[in-house]
Length: 355
Image (tube, rainbow, N blue to C red):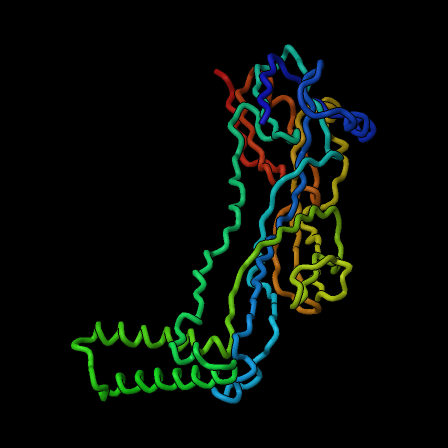
């Protein structure tokens, strides 16, 4: 942020022609005072995509013959799906709304705070600090284990893969029979207590799963996050936000291998069009500080024709601007102004008249 300590202050803005002239300047301190922007509201859409990886086992071709498990693929496969869509907003400089703050000996000393991009945050007050979105952290992957270490000497010594698969299937059936005997209380060596029984069953289940994975393969899952930023200036219907391919994940918007996800922006018309006030004083027209009166919009995400997520929010670029009179900032008042950094609206205004 940039803190600008202005010894004296006249808050001014020009007509539409003057605004376009000012907009070519960089925001910040100038010989005349300071230049600032009002913000417009950007949308941050965070899409979490889960990748499922299937890795075939060494005995995948024998799964149906020995374990009666059907449709086991012998090829490695990938599958992607969306697990969550997060939504948040933040403010960016609206260069079409550029205004000036100038020195004037009639004004009291004022502390003006600008964001790094030049948007006005506060006057004589601490700005609102919006926490940065947390970085996405995927869940740690469990340590992988080689199921071959559970093969006994007889299986390893088998002359070919088919024989190894047959002996491994026999081992799996023996493990399952042992589990059934323990559960029925008919095993030759029953555990002494429930905890010992639980440990024995857990070990047998793990061996069963490891050896079965040699036939049925293994499945691992990993989640990544993709962030899309949109800063709409008008209504639009079903613009392509991204495409998702089940086999490739997020792909380019023009890649027809992916299913399109659309974004629609609808202005809810909560703020009326701005009209000139013929009763307004000429001085008020050319002095003061501008703030946003944000309008309300509806953002909807579609998967094809189906709406999956919908959000309503206020956006500075869909409303109007309002002029706060420079009388609030003369020496008769101690005025504190705080703006919403996302919409540019007044978050807090405290004008206390000096005694």
